[in-house]
Image (cartoon, rainbow, N blue to C red; front, side):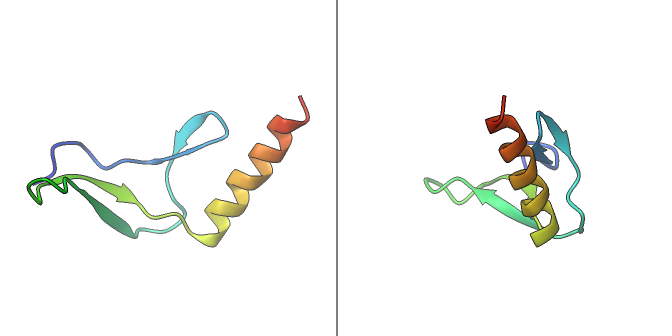
Length: 59
């Protein structure tokens, strides 16, 4: 069982749900314990993050 709740993506200054339902486990390499489940970003999520980053660079 994961120690932490399902982790969202951090895009444009806030935590958001991924556009799909895929996840992956974050595992402690010292003991193999699952620390958290993390939402897996889709291509669309990455594009949204890039647009937000480009917008931030213009400030």
